Image (cartoon, rainbow, N blue to C red; front, side, top):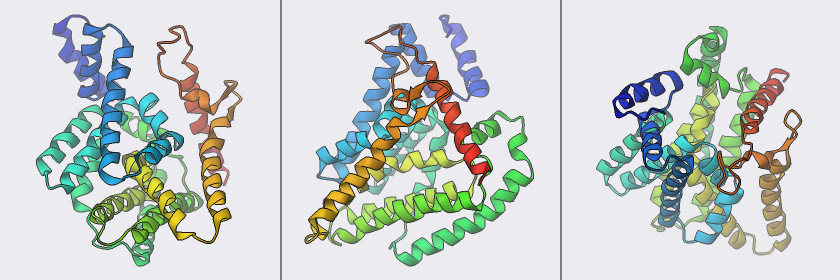
Length: 339
């Protein structure tokens, strides 16, 4: 990074055009370099922004704070937001608080926080659809309609993106999207995504809404977030390469996971072993990913979640994280190609 202040503006513009780094992230790095000359400072500030916002959000929508924080860590969201998607983590955290402010009828703060999120990661633009997602009631018929709508859009987008060869474009943005595409998503891939987001995830949220009393002050907010979740699900399932938008629902999803575990205890009164099986299966699903082996790098999945730099070992090798990431994408792409 430049040390001469006269070079800052050209550097910010060049970073955005050539690398896709939004100005907020570049400015944060410039300030930290000028004041501390250490990337540790960037990581510390990023973690403070993310976790203060996340814990504030938890505080607004659940009384089970300890369990919610536990799920936050076990569900991989903590590692991802704090050690991997640093720019996007800030955008998600700020935007999530902004969505809460919108529900509280503080619309000015929604646009301020969502706008700040965009300054760190352009994907935060998706949050500006939040005001338009306000289903009065979520029902089984709603979920069926969402599935059929996503299927119809997918049939069109599959032709648009794949058959017209848009992923072969030299555009920086198209190449970036294609990297996250599970590139040749076919109808089996669509059904897999739909199962994850419209059956399991949406079903879990629907259960929590059903188990929550109608007079619960959070019920209206849950409907609002569920509406946004379904919109994101449609985008994820319908359009190849936009799966990362799911990150903007993850903080809400952690709360729903927490509420699910709490409510399941009350609704399975006569099946104590079922509670153990459900909790054990959940923890197994969360933990089994951490032992996945990457033969190219001779690494385990949990090794992916180390900081870019470490105050405990400044000589720690973190370059392997890039290759693990690329191997994971190529492995998923190959799997889908062969289906």
